[in-house]
Image (cartoon, rainbow, N blue to C red; front, side, top):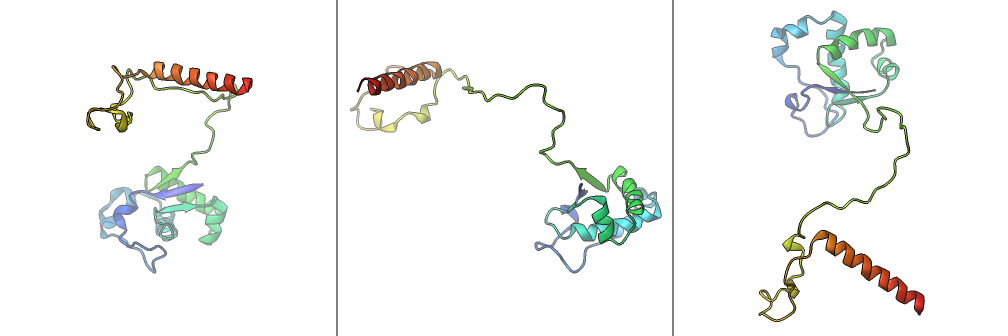
Length: 168
């Protein structure tokens, strides 16, 4: 499980982690959502903020048993106090990005896809071949090659080179 403190960056000013103390803002005194939390949750939150201060982005990593041990709480008490903090929005559970949302129904195959553009970008043409840039000398195509034409030309050149290698 990975937790993140809501609005962590807004309340921090240290650039280096593991500060000797954390800020506790006075505005908590007038925050009704804070005072509606159970007493155990209000006691747990500053302890979690201290754990969050060990990381740059306010993340707390570890399963509930490890976190409960680190805070010297029973894991059931820890979870009972943590759930109201999460449901009230003081902490956010971050799901790992590598977790599959659903099982695959079929194997994924790689696919080669070319973006469809009508013409190749002019900035990709070779400046040395542009007569306007090198004094009017040199070959210049009468029109810009389309993406499909370029792919066909490259495939044909590759096929011809392969056939020449086979004949040699």
